[in-house]
Length: 216
Image (tube, rainbow, N blue to C red; front, side, top):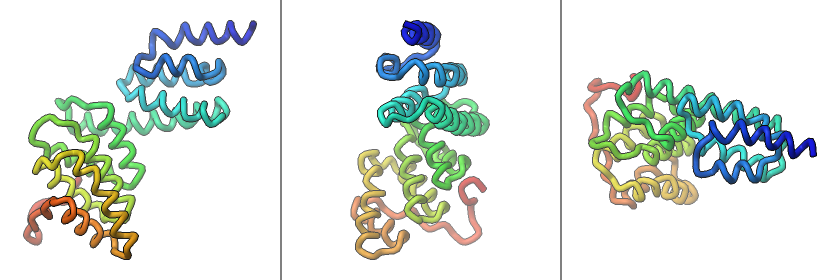
C-alpha cells in the first residue's frame, strides 16, 4: 500500500513536467524509487530544454538491466550535465540557430570521444541549409574514436556537409573504415578507402598556412 502511494505521488509530480513519447513507458516500467530519484533530474532537464527522450532512454536502459535507482540517477545526472554543457557551448556560438535534440546528443557524445564542442560547431558553418547535423556530428565522433586525427575528421565531415552528401551515405563511413582497418589498413588509409568506396570526393587540399583549423 505504501509503495503504491509513493508511486502515485511520484507520478503526480512527473507527469506535468516530463513530456515526450517515452514518458508513458517510463512511468509504467520504472519503480517508485527510481522515479523518485530521476524526477527532479528530468524536471531540470525540461526547464533547460535538454533532450528528454535520450535521458528517459538511459533510465529505461538501467531499469531493464536491474541497475539500482541511485546508480541510474547518477548516470542520468552525468548525462544531463553533458547535454547541458554541449547546449550551452553551441548556444554561445550559435545564438540564432535552432538546435535539435539529436544534434545536442551527438555533440555531447562526440565530446566524450575526444572532439571538442568547437570542432563539432565548425560543421554548422559548412551547412548550406537547415538540415539536421546529428548524423555528420555523430560520424565525426566515430571517425575520431577509430583513430582518425580530429583535424582530418573535421575537414572530411565539413566537406561532406558542404557538398550535401546524403545522410544515409555519410552514415556508412565508419563501417567502411572498420572493414578496411580489419584488412590491415591504418585509420587514415581506411578513411580514404571508405570515401572512395562511397564515391565521396576527398576535400580539396588547402594551401599550407592558409585558413584555420576547426575550432582554431
